[in-house]
Each structure stands twice: as structure tokens, then as C-alpha cells.
Image (cartoon, rainbow, N blue to C red; front, top):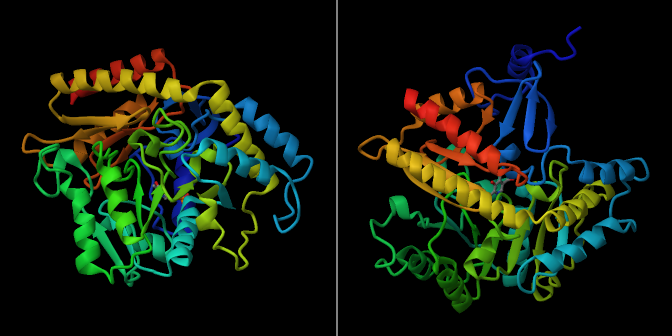
Length: 428
Ligand SMILES: Cc1ncc(COP(=O)(O)O)c(C=O)c1O
């Protein structure tokens, strides 16, 4: 007897019972029923190599026994009391985060989603500076609440018809399609310099914070040029504004460093983390220096934030990343993947750009006039799925093939995906 309802029944129920804002990938989507490390399995038992990791969540692999066994033990012992009572996992996790995060980041507030972590980080910046003016980057994405959506610079994700005021957007550091029509390094980081121009001309001069992803994920894996964040930080320091780095998508070894901002040699004032911290268990946090965090003295608590099971998952994730040297694997396999994609781009000019750090890699699909080739990308992704490879998609033009696989992916896996891609592109 069939144990599962099947893909079509899921779609039918989704239409009837789920709000229509929630779309899904693929014309013929599989129903996934099982995952183990870098693989997913559908109702028919077909195996897929997961190259998207549940959107940068499953850094340590699906249902990783070294992680879930600790969670199972915890769930059978004490699942929840709320951290208004004393339990120890969340303070141990906060201590570990203080150790692995850059600079003087020390005190954490635990919540459950990336959106919530960013909302909290923005509140903390406002409490500390006394300002509620913010700067964000065009094409950045920070969440679905009123404020985080208002700070999101991608039209597709800005549903709120009445966004919050006091927000300005700076040009994104997207060298492949420079919004200022300049070239690095002759541009002298004009996109960063514009932050000062914005503070001087479009704000009261007192700004709470600039929020940015260290690598823009939804924008299409946009990696800022070296020096960008340093220049931005200098400008913010000059005006007493804080730098909030959103590591929701980039954190926990994905970029080849524990946090992607470490690739840019800059210490944020506040950092938000989520997704991979729980490897599938809902947990997020914002973390700041003691000096800034200690201004948050009025009551604040999140019912499920840092509960015993989520916190044990976070501790197990950090232990696994260190024990199995996932930063090194992300760096090596990422290089292998990008080298292979660059070779494919020489054969197939539809791949206009290959970029990324570690296992956060994008291949931008273009037509000969550089316009986004999103339909062709959809065809390639569908075909790759049929061949057993799940690859993501993002970019403002929905034309960037996104690789954010579990960081346990092997050299042979990367060769397999590159070989399959070669065959599919050849047929296009
Ligand atoms: C960079 C970034 N920030 C924030 C969010 C929101 O996180 P969540 O969906 O967990 O609320 C996302 C989600 O994809 C994200 O990519």
C-alpha cells in the first residue's frame, strides 16, 4: 500500500489549504519523503543529489546521525520550558557562538527564524543609537515582517503596500552588472562611497544601522569586491551608525569560513544567524558586543527561542563543523565546482558569469545581449532534477543557478553534477 499521498495530491491540498503566496519549484515537482546526508529521496525511492541544502540550511547533511541522535536524546528528556526558566543548553550555545563569531561579538538573543533575528538586530541597533533610520542594499533580502520586508531590496519579495519609512537603499556591490556602470578597482568602490552620500543627503545624519548580507543570496550570489565592507564600516563609524551583517544564508562554514564576513576582514557590530545553525531545527539568533547588547535591558523573551532541543542542535552543528572540517571541504569543493562551471561557460556562452565563495556558488544564465535567460535556466533545472540533481535558483532576474549543497558533498558528487550539466546544456 502506498504510504504517501503523492506529488499531485500535495499540490491539490496546497491549492485548497495553503495561502497562494507560497510557490514551489518545477513543472513536475517530486514529493520528497526522506533525506540522508547529501541525498534526498522521493516517494518512488528515486535518489537525488541535493545541491541546494533546503536553501542553505542543511550544511551538515540531512538527518545527520551525529546531530539528530543528540536531538532525540534531548527531546525524550526535556523538550521545552521557555528560557524564562533555567536550562543549560542555550547558555552553552551562546558561549560557543561567542567563541566562533568574529571580533568581540559576545551576547546572543535566541529566536526561531532569520526574519526574527534580523528584526531583533534592527531593534537592538535602534535601542543603542536612539535612531530608527536604516540603510539597506538594493537586491538584499532580510525577511517577511513589516520592517525586514521594508529593508528588502527585491521587488518580488516586497509585498507590503505600506512599507516603513526612514529607510534608504544603497547600490549593491554587483560587479557583473555594476549599477553605477563602473569597473572594479578603478571605481574606487563608488558603491560603498554612496553610503556616505546617502547619510548626508537622505537621512537626519543619525542612522541606526546599515544591514547587509555578506554575500547576497537571493540577489543571485552577489559577492562584494574586496575592500567594500571595510569602506562601508569606516563610513558608518564616522556617523555613529552600526553595521548589521545578515549571515542567515551565508553562516556556518558555507563560504569556506565559519561566517562569510570573515572573508572581508571586517567585524560587524551585530550579526544575525539562522538556517544552518539548526541544520533543519528552527533556531536563530542575533549576537552583539557586550557594549551594545547591554543596552537591551527592558524585558524581552521569545517563547521558543533557544529551547533545549534547538540549542542542542546548534551545539551539535558547531561540533560537527569543526570535527569534520566543513570549512575546508566547502572551500575545496567550491573551487572544484567553480572551475568546472567556468570550463562549461567556455563551451556554453549561456553561462555569463560564475561567482561565489566556498559552497555558495552562482552561475548566471544570459542571452547574447546579456539579458536574463530565466526560461532556459528553468528548462535546465527541470532536466537536472529528472536526472537526479536538485539545484536552486535565485537572482533578481530569476536567472542564477544556485549551488548551496550540504557541505559534506564529495569530489565525486561535484564531478557528477558537472557531467550531467554538460549533457543538459549540450541538449539546450
Ligand atoms: C539573507 C536572508 N535573511 C533573512 C531571511 C529570512 O529568513 P527566514 O525565512 O528564516 O525568516 C532569509 C531567507 O531566505 C535570507 O536569505
